[in-house]
Image (cartoon, rainbow, N blue to C red; front, side, top):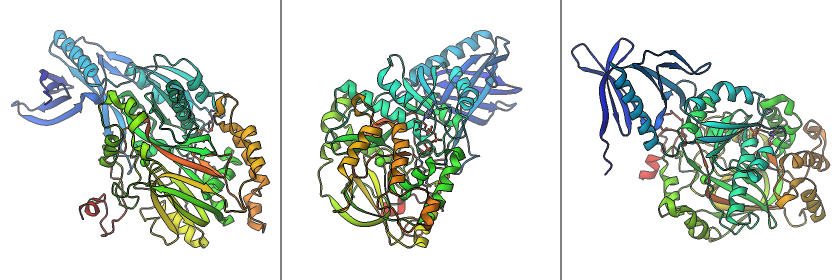
Length: 581
Ligand SMILES: CCCCCCCCCCCCC/C=C/[C@@H](O)[C@H](COP(=O)(O)O)NC(=O)CCCCC
Ligand SMILES: Nc1ncnc2c1ncn2[C@@H]1O[C@H](COP(=O)(O)OP(=O)(O)O)[C@@H](O)[C@H]1O
Ligand SMILES: [Ca+2]
Protein backbone atom coordinates (compact mmCIF):
# COMPACT_ATOMS: atom_id res chain seq x y z
CA UNK A 1 0.00 0.00 0.00
CA UNK A 2 1.26 3.50 -0.86
CA UNK A 3 2.03 5.64 2.17
CA UNK A 4 1.30 9.31 1.66
CA UNK A 5 2.88 11.16 4.62
CA UNK A 6 2.38 14.86 5.25
CA UNK A 7 5.66 16.45 4.34
CA UNK A 8 4.94 19.98 5.37
CA UNK A 9 2.10 21.73 7.12
CA UNK A 10 1.91 25.34 8.26
CA UNK A 11 -0.19 28.40 8.53
CA UNK A 12 0.12 30.68 5.48
CA UNK A 13 -1.59 33.79 4.19
CA UNK A 14 -3.23 34.30 0.83
CA UNK A 15 -4.04 37.99 0.56
CA UNK A 16 -5.69 38.93 3.84
CA UNK A 17 -6.98 35.43 4.60
CA UNK A 18 -5.28 32.84 6.78
CA UNK A 19 -4.97 29.26 5.53
CA UNK A 20 -3.68 25.95 6.81
CA UNK A 21 -1.56 24.61 3.97
CA UNK A 22 -0.38 21.01 3.76
CA UNK A 23 1.82 19.23 1.28
CA UNK A 24 1.46 15.47 1.20
CA UNK A 25 3.20 13.34 -1.37
CA UNK A 26 0.26 13.51 -3.76
CA UNK A 27 -1.61 16.72 -2.97
CA UNK A 28 -1.15 20.34 -2.06
CA UNK A 29 -4.15 21.49 0.03
CA UNK A 30 -4.95 24.85 1.53
CA UNK A 31 -7.91 25.38 3.83
CA UNK A 32 -9.23 28.79 4.76
CA UNK A 33 -9.51 29.31 8.55
CA UNK A 34 -11.98 31.58 10.27
CA UNK A 35 -11.17 33.77 13.27
CA UNK A 36 -11.78 30.84 15.63
CA UNK A 37 -9.42 28.60 13.64
CA UNK A 38 -12.31 26.58 12.19
CA UNK A 39 -11.96 25.15 8.68
CA UNK A 40 -13.77 26.89 5.85
CA UNK A 41 -13.34 25.82 2.24
CA UNK A 42 -10.39 23.74 1.00
CA UNK A 43 -8.60 23.85 -2.32
CA UNK A 44 -6.83 20.61 -3.24
CA UNK A 45 -4.43 20.30 -6.16
CA UNK A 46 -2.75 17.01 -7.10
CA UNK A 47 1.03 17.49 -7.17
CA UNK A 48 0.93 15.98 -10.67
CA UNK A 49 -1.08 19.04 -11.77
CA UNK A 50 1.24 21.66 -10.26
CA UNK A 51 2.83 23.53 -13.17
CA UNK A 52 5.52 25.46 -11.31
CA UNK A 53 6.60 27.17 -8.10
CA UNK A 54 8.31 30.57 -8.11
CA UNK A 55 9.74 32.84 -5.43
CA UNK A 56 7.86 36.10 -4.84
CA UNK A 57 4.60 37.25 -6.37
CA UNK A 58 4.90 36.19 -9.95
CA UNK A 59 2.79 36.70 -13.04
CA UNK A 60 3.19 34.86 -16.35
CA UNK A 61 1.39 36.87 -18.98
CA UNK A 62 2.22 38.81 -21.07
CA UNK A 63 5.61 37.56 -19.88
CA UNK A 64 6.99 36.04 -16.74
CA UNK A 65 7.85 38.73 -14.19
CA UNK A 66 8.16 39.11 -10.43
CA UNK A 67 5.62 41.72 -9.32
CA UNK A 68 7.09 41.88 -5.82
CA UNK A 69 9.52 39.78 -3.78
CA UNK A 70 9.26 40.32 -0.07
CA UNK A 71 11.36 37.16 0.56
CA UNK A 72 8.47 35.60 2.46
CA UNK A 73 6.25 34.96 -0.56
CA UNK A 74 5.99 32.26 -3.17
CA UNK A 75 3.60 31.62 -6.07
CA UNK A 76 2.19 28.24 -7.06
CA UNK A 77 0.87 27.65 -10.60
CA UNK A 78 -1.42 24.71 -11.25
CA UNK A 79 -4.10 23.27 -13.52
CA UNK A 80 -7.52 24.78 -12.89
CA UNK A 81 -10.57 23.28 -14.63
CA UNK A 82 -13.09 25.66 -16.06
CA UNK A 83 -16.53 24.45 -17.03
CA UNK A 84 -17.23 27.39 -19.31
CA UNK A 85 -16.46 27.29 -22.97
CA UNK A 86 -17.35 23.80 -24.12
CA UNK A 87 -20.12 21.35 -23.25
CA UNK A 88 -17.96 18.48 -24.56
CA UNK A 89 -14.68 18.72 -22.72
CA UNK A 90 -13.18 20.63 -19.83
CA UNK A 91 -11.10 23.69 -20.54
CA UNK A 92 -7.93 23.82 -18.48
CA UNK A 93 -6.57 27.14 -17.31
CA UNK A 94 -3.48 28.21 -15.39
CA UNK A 95 -4.43 28.64 -11.74
CA UNK A 96 -2.20 30.90 -9.61
CA UNK A 97 -2.07 31.38 -5.84
CA UNK A 98 0.39 33.67 -4.06
CA UNK A 99 1.23 32.50 -0.53
CA UNK A 100 2.87 34.57 2.20
CA UNK A 101 4.86 32.80 4.93
CA UNK A 102 5.64 34.03 8.46
CA UNK A 103 9.40 33.77 7.75
CA UNK A 104 11.87 33.46 4.91
CA UNK A 105 13.05 30.08 6.25
CA UNK A 106 9.56 28.68 5.99
CA UNK A 107 9.20 30.07 2.47
CA UNK A 108 12.42 28.27 1.48
CA UNK A 109 11.17 25.05 3.03
CA UNK A 110 7.94 25.26 1.05
CA UNK A 111 9.80 25.94 -2.18
CA UNK A 112 12.20 23.05 -1.62
CA UNK A 113 9.55 20.54 -0.61
CA UNK A 114 7.24 21.47 -3.48
CA UNK A 115 10.03 21.10 -6.03
CA UNK A 116 11.06 17.71 -4.57
CA UNK A 117 7.43 16.55 -4.65
CA UNK A 118 7.13 17.65 -8.29
CA UNK A 119 10.24 15.71 -9.30
CA UNK A 120 9.19 12.60 -7.39
CA UNK A 121 5.57 12.46 -8.43
CA UNK A 122 5.75 13.65 -12.01
CA UNK A 123 8.55 11.56 -13.52
CA UNK A 124 7.06 11.55 -17.01
CA UNK A 125 7.07 15.31 -17.53
CA UNK A 126 8.96 16.45 -20.63
CA UNK A 127 12.07 18.58 -20.16
CA UNK A 128 12.93 19.19 -23.79
CA UNK A 129 10.52 19.34 -26.73
CA UNK A 130 10.86 19.63 -30.49
CA UNK A 131 8.07 21.92 -31.74
CA UNK A 132 6.90 22.19 -35.37
CA UNK A 133 4.67 25.11 -36.34
CA UNK A 134 2.73 25.00 -39.61
CA UNK A 135 2.38 28.71 -40.38
CA UNK A 136 -0.31 27.98 -42.99
CA UNK A 137 -2.59 25.70 -40.96
CA UNK A 138 -6.21 26.73 -40.23
CA UNK A 139 -6.52 30.51 -39.95
CA UNK A 140 -2.71 30.87 -40.28
CA UNK A 141 -2.30 31.79 -36.62
CA UNK A 142 0.02 28.96 -35.56
CA UNK A 143 3.04 31.16 -34.83
CA UNK A 144 1.05 33.68 -32.82
CA UNK A 145 -0.78 30.97 -30.87
CA UNK A 146 2.49 29.30 -29.94
CA UNK A 147 4.41 32.43 -28.94
CA UNK A 148 1.63 34.18 -27.05
CA UNK A 149 -0.18 31.28 -25.35
CA UNK A 150 2.09 28.25 -25.22
CA UNK A 151 5.73 29.37 -24.98
CA UNK A 152 5.20 31.32 -21.70
CA UNK A 153 3.68 28.21 -20.10
CA UNK A 154 6.55 25.99 -21.26
CA UNK A 155 9.01 28.54 -19.85
CA UNK A 156 7.20 28.61 -16.51
CA UNK A 157 7.32 24.82 -16.35
CA UNK A 158 11.05 24.78 -17.10
CA UNK A 159 10.61 23.09 -20.49
CA UNK A 160 13.13 24.05 -23.14
CA UNK A 161 11.92 23.83 -26.69
CA UNK A 162 13.49 23.85 -30.11
CA UNK A 163 11.04 25.48 -32.52
CA UNK A 164 10.91 24.80 -36.28
CA UNK A 165 8.52 26.90 -38.36
CA UNK A 166 7.96 24.70 -41.39
CA UNK A 167 8.71 26.03 -44.86
CA UNK A 168 7.30 23.12 -46.82
CA UNK A 169 4.98 20.16 -46.45
CA UNK A 170 6.66 17.03 -45.01
CA UNK A 171 9.49 18.99 -43.40
CA UNK A 172 8.40 17.92 -39.91
CA UNK A 173 8.11 14.27 -40.94
CA UNK A 174 11.53 14.27 -42.62
CA UNK A 175 13.13 16.03 -39.65
CA UNK A 176 11.89 13.34 -37.25
CA UNK A 177 12.93 10.55 -39.62
CA UNK A 178 16.44 11.82 -40.27
CA UNK A 179 17.73 14.25 -37.66
CA UNK A 180 19.38 13.56 -34.31
CA UNK A 181 16.63 13.53 -31.67
CA UNK A 182 18.85 12.87 -28.68
CA UNK A 183 17.63 14.70 -25.60
CA UNK A 184 14.09 15.30 -26.83
CA UNK A 185 11.32 13.80 -24.71
CA UNK A 186 8.59 14.48 -27.22
CA UNK A 187 7.55 16.21 -30.42
CA UNK A 188 4.79 18.82 -30.64
CA UNK A 189 2.90 20.22 -33.62
CA UNK A 190 1.10 23.53 -33.83
CA UNK A 191 -1.43 23.17 -36.64
CA UNK A 192 -4.12 20.77 -37.81
CA UNK A 193 -4.58 17.08 -38.49
CA UNK A 194 -2.21 17.34 -41.49
CA UNK A 195 0.87 18.45 -39.56
CA UNK A 196 -0.08 15.95 -36.81
CA UNK A 197 -0.04 13.26 -39.48
CA UNK A 198 3.50 14.31 -40.43
CA UNK A 199 4.61 13.78 -36.82
CA UNK A 200 2.76 10.47 -36.68
CA UNK A 201 4.56 9.19 -39.80
CA UNK A 202 7.91 10.47 -38.56
CA UNK A 203 7.60 8.91 -35.12
CA UNK A 204 6.27 5.54 -36.32
CA UNK A 205 8.76 5.37 -39.21
CA UNK A 206 11.72 6.21 -37.02
CA UNK A 207 10.72 3.69 -34.36
CA UNK A 208 10.42 0.90 -36.94
CA UNK A 209 13.75 1.89 -38.55
CA UNK A 210 15.47 1.69 -35.18
CA UNK A 211 13.78 -1.65 -34.43
CA UNK A 212 14.81 -3.01 -37.85
CA UNK A 213 11.18 -3.65 -38.88
CA UNK A 214 9.68 -3.16 -42.33
CA UNK A 215 6.59 -0.94 -42.33
CA UNK A 216 5.57 -2.39 -45.67
CA UNK A 217 4.88 -5.88 -44.38
CA UNK A 218 1.20 -5.84 -43.34
CA UNK A 219 1.57 -9.08 -41.40
CA UNK A 220 4.15 -7.66 -38.99
CA UNK A 221 3.43 -6.35 -35.50
CA UNK A 222 4.88 -2.85 -35.41
CA UNK A 223 6.98 -1.61 -32.50
CA UNK A 224 5.04 0.83 -30.30
CA UNK A 225 6.62 4.28 -30.09
CA UNK A 226 8.10 5.82 -26.94
CA UNK A 227 8.47 9.39 -28.22
CA UNK A 228 5.26 11.22 -27.22
CA UNK A 229 3.36 13.53 -29.57
CA UNK A 230 1.72 16.76 -28.41
CA UNK A 231 -0.86 18.71 -30.42
CA UNK A 232 -1.49 22.44 -30.09
CA UNK A 233 -4.66 22.87 -32.17
CA UNK A 234 -4.34 25.55 -34.86
CA UNK A 235 -5.78 23.82 -37.92
CA UNK A 236 -9.07 23.42 -39.76
CA UNK A 237 -10.70 20.29 -38.30
CA UNK A 238 -8.36 19.47 -35.39
CA UNK A 239 -10.15 16.17 -35.00
CA UNK A 240 -7.29 14.31 -33.27
CA UNK A 241 -7.01 16.98 -30.60
CA UNK A 242 -10.77 17.25 -30.05
CA UNK A 243 -11.24 13.49 -29.84
CA UNK A 244 -8.40 12.99 -27.35
CA UNK A 245 -8.82 16.10 -25.17
CA UNK A 246 -12.48 17.06 -25.64
CA UNK A 247 -11.80 20.67 -26.66
CA UNK A 248 -9.70 22.48 -29.22
CA UNK A 249 -7.93 24.90 -26.97
CA UNK A 250 -4.18 25.68 -27.14
CA UNK A 251 -3.82 26.43 -23.40
CA UNK A 252 -5.57 23.19 -22.36
CA UNK A 253 -3.32 21.19 -24.70
CA UNK A 254 -0.17 22.98 -23.52
CA UNK A 255 -1.02 22.11 -19.90
CA UNK A 256 -1.55 18.43 -20.79
CA UNK A 257 1.88 18.44 -22.44
CA UNK A 258 3.56 20.11 -19.46
CA UNK A 259 2.28 17.61 -16.91
CA UNK A 260 3.32 14.74 -19.18
CA UNK A 261 -0.09 13.14 -19.66
CA UNK A 262 0.03 10.00 -21.74
CA UNK A 263 -2.78 8.68 -23.93
CA UNK A 264 -2.15 5.61 -26.10
CA UNK A 265 -3.73 5.68 -29.54
CA UNK A 266 -4.66 3.01 -32.07
CA UNK A 267 -3.27 3.56 -35.55
CA UNK A 268 -4.49 2.11 -38.82
CA UNK A 269 -1.91 1.26 -41.48
CA UNK A 270 -3.13 1.49 -45.07
CA UNK A 271 -1.46 -0.77 -47.63
CA UNK A 272 -1.68 -1.20 -51.37
CA UNK A 273 -0.37 -4.54 -52.65
CA UNK A 274 2.67 -5.04 -50.44
CA UNK A 275 3.49 -1.41 -49.78
CA UNK A 276 2.57 0.88 -46.93
CA UNK A 277 0.63 3.84 -48.26
CA UNK A 278 -0.10 5.84 -45.08
CA UNK A 279 -1.05 5.66 -41.43
CA UNK A 280 -4.33 7.05 -40.11
CA UNK A 281 -5.83 7.68 -36.70
CA UNK A 282 -9.09 9.41 -37.52
CA UNK A 283 -10.61 8.80 -40.95
CA UNK A 284 -10.02 6.50 -43.86
CA UNK A 285 -13.04 7.45 -45.95
CA UNK A 286 -14.19 6.65 -49.50
CA UNK A 287 -17.10 8.23 -51.36
CA UNK A 288 -18.52 11.30 -49.61
CA UNK A 289 -15.49 12.11 -47.41
CA UNK A 290 -13.02 11.45 -50.23
CA UNK A 291 -14.98 13.64 -52.63
CA UNK A 292 -15.29 16.44 -50.05
CA UNK A 293 -11.54 16.43 -49.54
CA UNK A 294 -10.76 16.41 -53.27
CA UNK A 295 -13.16 19.29 -53.80
CA UNK A 296 -11.91 21.22 -50.76
CA UNK A 297 -8.32 21.25 -52.04
CA UNK A 298 -9.49 23.61 -54.77
CA UNK A 299 -10.82 26.04 -52.18
CA UNK A 300 -7.99 26.14 -49.63
CA UNK A 301 -8.13 29.93 -49.74
CA UNK A 302 -11.45 29.69 -47.86
CA UNK A 303 -9.63 28.29 -44.80
CA UNK A 304 -11.63 25.92 -42.55
CA UNK A 305 -14.87 26.95 -44.35
CA UNK A 306 -13.69 25.04 -47.43
CA UNK A 307 -15.04 21.82 -45.90
CA UNK A 308 -18.54 23.26 -45.39
CA UNK A 309 -18.69 24.61 -48.92
CA UNK A 310 -17.31 21.40 -50.43
CA UNK A 311 -19.58 19.26 -48.24
CA UNK A 312 -22.61 21.06 -49.65
CA UNK A 313 -21.33 20.74 -53.24
CA UNK A 314 -20.59 17.04 -52.91
CA UNK A 315 -23.91 16.37 -51.26
CA UNK A 316 -25.69 18.07 -54.16
CA UNK A 317 -23.72 15.98 -56.66
CA UNK A 318 -25.60 12.95 -55.24
CA UNK A 319 -22.97 10.27 -55.89
CA UNK A 320 -22.56 6.65 -54.96
CA UNK A 321 -19.82 4.20 -55.88
CA UNK A 322 -19.60 0.48 -56.48
CA UNK A 323 -17.17 -1.55 -54.40
CA UNK A 324 -16.38 -4.71 -52.48
CA UNK A 325 -15.70 -4.32 -48.76
CA UNK A 326 -14.19 -7.14 -46.72
CA UNK A 327 -13.67 -6.88 -42.99
CA UNK A 328 -12.34 -8.93 -40.12
CA UNK A 329 -14.69 -8.46 -37.13
CA UNK A 330 -13.25 -7.75 -33.67
CA UNK A 331 -14.39 -9.75 -30.63
CA UNK A 332 -18.01 -8.66 -30.14
CA UNK A 333 -17.93 -9.80 -26.48
CA UNK A 334 -15.56 -6.97 -25.58
CA UNK A 335 -17.46 -3.96 -26.97
CA UNK A 336 -19.67 -2.83 -29.82
CA UNK A 337 -19.97 0.40 -31.82
CA UNK A 338 -23.65 0.53 -30.77
CA UNK A 339 -23.26 -0.12 -27.03
CA UNK A 340 -23.89 3.56 -26.31
CA UNK A 341 -20.73 3.96 -24.21
CA UNK A 342 -18.20 6.77 -24.51
CA UNK A 343 -14.46 6.32 -24.33
CA UNK A 344 -13.58 8.64 -21.45
CA UNK A 345 -10.38 9.22 -19.51
CA UNK A 346 -9.45 5.97 -17.72
CA UNK A 347 -11.74 3.97 -20.07
CA UNK A 348 -12.12 0.37 -18.90
CA UNK A 349 -12.42 -1.05 -22.43
CA UNK A 350 -9.08 0.55 -23.37
CA UNK A 351 -7.50 -0.60 -20.07
CA UNK A 352 -8.50 -4.16 -20.91
CA UNK A 353 -6.94 -3.56 -24.33
CA UNK A 354 -3.70 -2.57 -22.57
CA UNK A 355 -3.79 -5.76 -20.47
CA UNK A 356 -4.29 -7.83 -23.60
CA UNK A 357 -1.58 -6.00 -25.50
CA UNK A 358 1.01 -5.65 -22.76
CA UNK A 359 0.18 -8.16 -20.03
CA UNK A 360 3.54 -7.80 -18.29
CA UNK A 361 5.26 -4.92 -16.57
CA UNK A 362 5.98 -1.66 -18.47
CA UNK A 363 9.60 -2.81 -18.79
CA UNK A 364 8.54 -5.88 -20.70
CA UNK A 365 6.21 -3.91 -22.94
CA UNK A 366 8.24 -3.48 -26.10
CA UNK A 367 9.58 -7.04 -26.05
CA UNK A 368 6.10 -8.36 -25.52
CA UNK A 369 4.51 -6.16 -28.17
CA UNK A 370 6.75 -7.44 -30.89
CA UNK A 371 5.99 -11.07 -30.22
CA UNK A 372 2.78 -11.75 -28.41
CA UNK A 373 0.35 -8.86 -28.82
CA UNK A 374 -3.29 -9.50 -29.61
CA UNK A 375 -2.33 -8.67 -33.16
CA UNK A 376 -0.58 -11.98 -33.44
CA UNK A 377 -4.25 -13.00 -33.73
CA UNK A 378 -5.19 -10.11 -35.97
CA UNK A 379 -5.52 -12.35 -38.98
CA UNK A 380 -7.60 -14.87 -37.07
CA UNK A 381 -11.34 -15.02 -37.67
CA UNK A 382 -13.66 -15.10 -40.63
CA UNK A 383 -13.55 -12.30 -43.18
CA UNK A 384 -16.98 -10.92 -44.08
CA UNK A 385 -17.66 -9.56 -47.56
CA UNK A 386 -20.16 -6.88 -48.65
CA UNK A 387 -20.61 -5.87 -52.27
CA UNK A 388 -22.79 -3.03 -53.50
CA UNK A 389 -23.05 0.68 -54.18
CA UNK A 390 -22.04 2.97 -51.35
CA UNK A 391 -22.49 6.62 -50.49
CA UNK A 392 -19.66 6.44 -48.01
CA UNK A 393 -17.31 3.85 -46.56
CA UNK A 394 -15.42 5.04 -43.47
CA UNK A 395 -12.99 3.43 -41.08
CA UNK A 396 -12.07 5.24 -37.88
CA UNK A 397 -9.86 4.11 -34.98
CA UNK A 398 -11.43 6.64 -32.60
CA UNK A 399 -14.70 8.58 -32.30
CA UNK A 400 -13.34 11.28 -34.65
CA UNK A 401 -15.34 13.89 -32.82
CA UNK A 402 -14.64 17.46 -33.87
CA UNK A 403 -16.45 20.80 -33.57
CA UNK A 404 -18.40 19.99 -36.75
CA UNK A 405 -19.55 16.68 -35.24
CA UNK A 406 -19.18 16.81 -31.44
CA UNK A 407 -19.92 13.12 -30.89
CA UNK A 408 -18.04 12.10 -33.99
CA UNK A 409 -18.19 9.63 -36.83
CA UNK A 410 -18.51 6.74 -34.36
CA UNK A 411 -19.45 8.06 -30.90
CA UNK A 412 -18.73 4.79 -29.05
CA UNK A 413 -15.36 4.06 -30.67
CA UNK A 414 -12.35 3.71 -28.36
CA UNK A 415 -9.02 5.51 -28.54
CA UNK A 416 -6.86 2.57 -27.53
CA UNK A 417 -8.75 -0.74 -27.69
CA UNK A 418 -6.94 -2.08 -30.76
CA UNK A 419 -10.01 -1.89 -33.03
CA UNK A 420 -11.56 0.45 -35.56
CA UNK A 421 -15.18 1.08 -36.55
CA UNK A 422 -16.21 0.45 -40.15
CA UNK A 423 -19.23 2.54 -41.20
CA UNK A 424 -20.94 1.46 -44.39
CA UNK A 425 -23.52 3.82 -45.87
CA UNK A 426 -25.23 2.04 -48.75
CA UNK A 427 -26.74 3.96 -51.65
CA UNK A 428 -29.94 5.70 -50.65
CA UNK A 429 -32.14 8.62 -51.68
CA UNK A 430 -30.75 12.13 -51.10
CA UNK A 431 -33.01 12.89 -48.15
CA UNK A 432 -31.93 9.69 -46.39
CA UNK A 433 -28.26 10.59 -46.82
CA UNK A 434 -28.92 14.14 -45.60
CA UNK A 435 -30.55 12.68 -42.47
CA UNK A 436 -27.46 10.54 -41.92
CA UNK A 437 -25.12 13.53 -42.27
CA UNK A 438 -27.28 15.81 -40.19
CA UNK A 439 -27.36 13.33 -37.29
CA UNK A 440 -23.59 13.84 -36.92
CA UNK A 441 -24.33 17.31 -35.66
CA UNK A 442 -26.80 16.25 -32.95
CA UNK A 443 -27.21 13.45 -30.39
CA UNK A 444 -29.44 11.45 -32.75
CA UNK A 445 -28.06 8.04 -33.70
CA UNK A 446 -26.69 8.13 -37.25
CA UNK A 447 -26.43 4.32 -37.24
CA UNK A 448 -30.16 3.88 -36.61
CA UNK A 449 -30.98 4.10 -40.31
CA UNK A 450 -31.85 1.17 -42.60
CA UNK A 451 -29.09 1.92 -45.12
CA UNK A 452 -26.28 2.24 -42.52
CA UNK A 453 -24.22 -0.56 -40.97
CA UNK A 454 -21.42 -0.26 -38.46
CA UNK A 455 -18.95 -2.98 -37.45
CA UNK A 456 -16.09 -3.09 -34.96
CA UNK A 457 -13.15 -4.49 -36.90
CA UNK A 458 -9.47 -5.43 -36.83
CA UNK A 459 -8.85 -5.09 -40.56
CA UNK A 460 -10.59 -3.98 -43.77
CA UNK A 461 -10.01 -4.48 -47.51
CA UNK A 462 -11.62 -2.50 -50.32
CA UNK A 463 -11.63 -3.44 -53.98
CA UNK A 464 -13.54 -2.52 -57.10
CA UNK A 465 -16.08 -5.00 -58.46
CA UNK A 466 -14.84 -7.46 -61.07
CA UNK A 467 -14.52 -5.71 -64.40
CA UNK A 468 -13.89 -2.32 -62.77
CA UNK A 469 -10.46 -3.01 -61.25
CA UNK A 470 -7.97 -0.21 -61.31
CA UNK A 471 -5.77 0.10 -64.34
CA UNK A 472 -2.51 -1.43 -63.14
CA UNK A 473 -0.33 0.84 -65.32
CA UNK A 474 -2.13 3.87 -64.03
CA UNK A 475 -1.56 2.59 -60.50
CA UNK A 476 2.16 2.16 -61.07
CA UNK A 477 2.45 5.56 -62.67
CA UNK A 478 0.74 7.21 -59.73
CA UNK A 479 2.94 5.47 -57.17
CA UNK A 480 6.11 6.58 -58.94
CA UNK A 481 4.90 10.06 -59.65
CA UNK A 482 3.16 11.32 -56.59
CA UNK A 483 2.51 8.86 -53.86
CA UNK A 484 5.96 8.09 -52.50
CA UNK A 485 9.31 9.72 -52.07
CA UNK A 486 12.41 7.99 -53.36
CA UNK A 487 13.89 7.15 -49.98
CA UNK A 488 12.30 4.04 -48.61
CA UNK A 489 8.95 4.48 -50.37
CA UNK A 490 7.61 6.71 -47.65
CA UNK A 491 4.39 8.46 -48.58
CA UNK A 492 4.58 12.05 -49.70
CA UNK A 493 1.70 14.38 -48.89
CA UNK A 494 2.07 17.43 -51.07
CA UNK A 495 3.23 15.53 -54.14
CA UNK A 496 0.24 13.27 -54.03
CA UNK A 497 -2.13 16.18 -53.46
CA UNK A 498 -1.63 18.05 -56.67
CA UNK A 499 -1.31 14.88 -58.64
CA UNK A 500 -4.46 13.37 -57.27
CA UNK A 501 -6.49 16.50 -57.75
CA UNK A 502 -5.40 16.41 -61.39
CA UNK A 503 -6.04 12.70 -61.55
CA UNK A 504 -9.43 13.27 -60.00
CA UNK A 505 -10.21 15.70 -62.79
CA UNK A 506 -9.26 13.08 -65.36
CA UNK A 507 -11.63 10.76 -63.63
CA UNK A 508 -14.49 13.15 -64.19
CA UNK A 509 -14.32 15.14 -60.96
CA UNK A 510 -13.63 18.36 -62.82
CA UNK A 511 -15.81 20.56 -60.73
CA UNK A 512 -18.76 19.59 -58.65
CA UNK A 513 -20.77 22.55 -59.86
CA UNK A 514 -20.26 21.09 -63.33
CA UNK A 515 -20.96 17.62 -61.94
CA UNK A 516 -24.42 18.78 -61.00
CA UNK A 517 -25.43 19.24 -64.60
CA UNK A 518 -23.19 16.64 -66.30
CA UNK A 519 -24.86 13.30 -66.77
CA UNK A 520 -21.67 11.18 -66.65
CA UNK A 521 -20.75 10.65 -63.03
CA UNK A 522 -17.32 9.23 -62.11
CA UNK A 523 -17.21 5.51 -61.35
CA UNK A 524 -14.57 5.75 -58.63
CA UNK A 525 -14.05 8.08 -55.72
CA UNK A 526 -10.80 8.74 -53.82
CA UNK A 527 -9.79 7.83 -50.27
CA UNK A 528 -9.51 10.55 -47.66
CA UNK A 529 -6.87 9.45 -45.15
CA UNK A 530 -6.81 11.94 -42.27
CA UNK A 531 -7.17 14.77 -44.75
CA UNK A 532 -4.83 13.42 -47.44
CA UNK A 533 -5.95 11.90 -50.75
CA UNK A 534 -4.55 8.42 -51.24
CA UNK A 535 -3.01 7.50 -54.58
CA UNK A 536 -4.87 4.15 -54.75
CA UNK A 537 -8.46 2.95 -54.76
CA UNK A 538 -7.84 -0.67 -53.80
CA UNK A 539 -6.42 -0.75 -50.30
CA UNK A 540 -6.17 -2.91 -47.21
CA UNK A 541 -6.16 -1.53 -43.66
CA UNK A 542 -5.02 -3.01 -40.38
CA UNK A 543 -5.48 -1.57 -36.87
CA UNK A 544 -2.37 -1.49 -34.64
CA UNK A 545 -3.38 -1.23 -31.00
CA UNK A 546 -1.78 1.59 -29.01
CA UNK A 547 1.01 2.19 -31.51
CA UNK A 548 1.67 5.80 -30.46
CA UNK A 549 1.23 7.96 -27.36
CA UNK A 550 -0.09 11.50 -27.13
CA UNK A 551 0.35 14.08 -24.37
CA UNK A 552 -3.35 13.81 -23.47
CA UNK A 553 -5.58 11.78 -21.14
CA UNK A 554 -8.82 11.27 -23.08
CA UNK A 555 -12.01 13.19 -22.38
CA UNK A 556 -12.51 13.86 -18.67
CA UNK A 557 -15.65 12.55 -17.06
CA UNK A 558 -16.52 15.89 -15.45
CA UNK A 559 -17.47 17.33 -18.81
CA UNK A 560 -21.18 17.12 -19.54
CA UNK A 561 -20.61 15.26 -22.79
CA UNK A 562 -24.08 14.59 -24.18
CA UNK A 563 -24.61 10.98 -25.14
CA UNK A 564 -27.17 9.28 -27.29
CA UNK A 565 -30.34 7.89 -25.75
CA UNK A 566 -29.82 4.21 -25.03
CA UNK A 567 -32.12 1.45 -26.19
CA UNK A 568 -34.24 2.01 -23.06
CA UNK A 569 -34.61 5.71 -23.81
CA UNK A 570 -32.20 6.91 -21.08
CA UNK A 571 -29.89 9.76 -21.84
CA UNK A 572 -26.44 10.04 -20.28
CA UNK A 573 -26.58 6.53 -18.80
CA UNK A 574 -23.31 6.12 -20.69
CA UNK A 575 -24.34 2.61 -21.52
CA UNK A 576 -24.45 1.49 -17.89
CA UNK A 577 -28.02 0.26 -18.17
CA UNK A 578 -27.19 -1.61 -21.36
CA UNK A 579 -24.09 -3.12 -19.79
CA UNK A 580 -25.97 -4.06 -16.62
CA UNK A 581 -28.65 -5.95 -18.49
C1 LIG B 1 -25.65 18.66 -42.98
C2 LIG B 1 -24.49 18.68 -42.07
C3 LIG B 1 -23.36 17.78 -42.53
C4 LIG B 1 -22.33 17.64 -41.46
C5 LIG B 1 -21.44 16.44 -41.68
C6 LIG B 1 -20.55 16.32 -40.55
C7 LIG B 1 -19.64 15.13 -40.62
C8 LIG B 1 -18.36 15.50 -39.96
C9 LIG B 1 -17.44 14.35 -39.77
C10 LIG B 1 -16.06 14.86 -39.59
C11 LIG B 1 -15.06 13.77 -39.53
C12 LIG B 1 -13.73 14.33 -39.38
C13 LIG B 1 -12.65 13.33 -39.52
C14 LIG B 1 -11.34 14.06 -39.59
C15 LIG B 1 -10.73 14.34 -40.71
C16 LIG B 1 -9.53 15.23 -40.76
O1 LIG B 1 -8.38 14.48 -40.56
C17 LIG B 1 -9.47 15.90 -42.12
C18 LIG B 1 -8.26 16.84 -42.23
O2 LIG B 1 -8.34 17.86 -41.29
P1 LIG B 1 -7.39 19.17 -41.38
O3 LIG B 1 -5.98 18.73 -41.51
O4 LIG B 1 -7.62 19.91 -40.10
O5 LIG B 1 -7.81 19.93 -42.58
N1 LIG B 1 -10.68 16.68 -42.32
C19 LIG B 1 -11.56 16.35 -43.24
O6 LIG B 1 -11.39 15.45 -44.02
C20 LIG B 1 -12.81 17.20 -43.31
C21 LIG B 1 -14.04 16.39 -43.48
C22 LIG B 1 -15.22 17.29 -43.49
C23 LIG B 1 -16.46 16.60 -43.90
C24 LIG B 1 -17.64 17.51 -43.99
N1 LIG C 1 5.20 25.29 -44.46
C1 LIG C 1 4.30 24.56 -45.11
N2 LIG C 1 3.91 24.88 -46.38
C2 LIG C 1 2.97 24.17 -47.02
N3 LIG C 1 2.34 23.10 -46.50
C3 LIG C 1 2.68 22.75 -45.24
C4 LIG C 1 3.66 23.45 -44.49
N4 LIG C 1 3.78 22.85 -43.27
C5 LIG C 1 2.91 21.81 -43.27
N5 LIG C 1 2.26 21.74 -44.44
C6 LIG C 1 1.20 20.80 -44.86
O1 LIG C 1 -0.03 21.53 -44.84
C7 LIG C 1 -1.12 20.62 -44.80
C8 LIG C 1 -2.23 21.12 -43.91
O2 LIG C 1 -1.75 21.34 -42.62
P1 LIG C 1 -2.65 21.40 -41.32
O3 LIG C 1 -1.70 21.82 -40.23
O4 LIG C 1 -3.37 20.15 -41.13
O5 LIG C 1 -3.68 22.57 -41.59
P2 LIG C 1 -5.26 22.45 -41.95
O6 LIG C 1 -5.91 21.86 -40.72
O7 LIG C 1 -5.68 23.86 -42.17
O8 LIG C 1 -5.42 21.58 -43.13
C9 LIG C 1 -0.53 19.31 -44.31
O9 LIG C 1 -0.59 18.41 -45.37
C10 LIG C 1 0.93 19.64 -43.98
O10 LIG C 1 1.76 18.55 -44.33
CA1 LIG D 1 -9.86 2.08 -31.41
